[in-house]
Image (cartoon, rainbow, N blue to C red; front, side, top):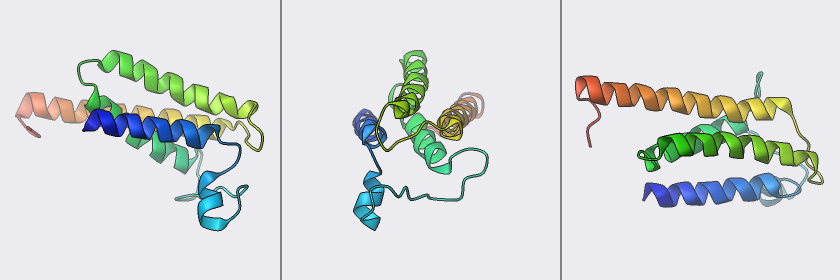
Length: 127
């Protein structure tokens, strides 16, 4: 179930990132140039943070035994997808988006480690 969720989210991220415009803007606002935002951006892009935070948590839980490989993968895909905005029409590379991706992954790693620590040391969060 988690691996299927990971694969679906991975595919959706790739489609949303590589589409020349905003799919959500097209669907909800009839404007493919408008990028809707969940919350206001601060130093980083909130949309990117939330997307990669959730993506990171699902990836880490889905691939517990392949943790090192999946960590490398989610970092590489987050950088690659943002850098591709340099060449995709109607998209632009922004450093705050890249930082949103990376910080979302880092926070998901921290939370994953805290839950793993609590599960191992105190017997919490057992399945």
